[in-house]
Amino acid sequence: MNVYIPLITLGGLAAIFALFSITIAPFTGPKRYNRARVDSYECGIEPTPQAVGGGKFPVKYYLTAMMFIIFDIEIVFLYPWAVYFDALGLFGFLAILLFIVNLTIPYVYEWRRGGLEWD
Image (tube, rainbow, N blue to C red):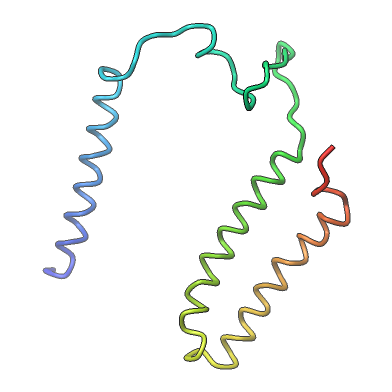
C-alpha cells in the first residue's frame, strides 16, 4: 500500500485544486460585460451575422482541427520510438512503419479530395 501513497496524494491535491478553482472563479473574475466581450471572436474580423438557429461552419475547420490532433498523437508515439530505436530492432521498425502508413493514407485521401486547399 505504501507504493500508492504518492499517487493518492497527487490525486487528492489535483481534486482540491480543481474544486478550489471552480469555487473561487465567480468571485475573482471580472464583471464588466460589454458588446465587444459578448460578441463572438473571428480572428479580429467583424463578426458576420448568423441565422437565428445558428450558422453553418465550413467542414474545413473541423478537418484542420482533426489533422492537428492526429499530428499530436503521431508525435506522442514517435518520440519514445525514436529514443529506444536501437533497442526495438526490426519489430519496432515494422510496427512504426505500419503506424505511419496508417496515418498517411487518410492524409493522402484528404489531399486528393482538396481538403487542404483554402479558398
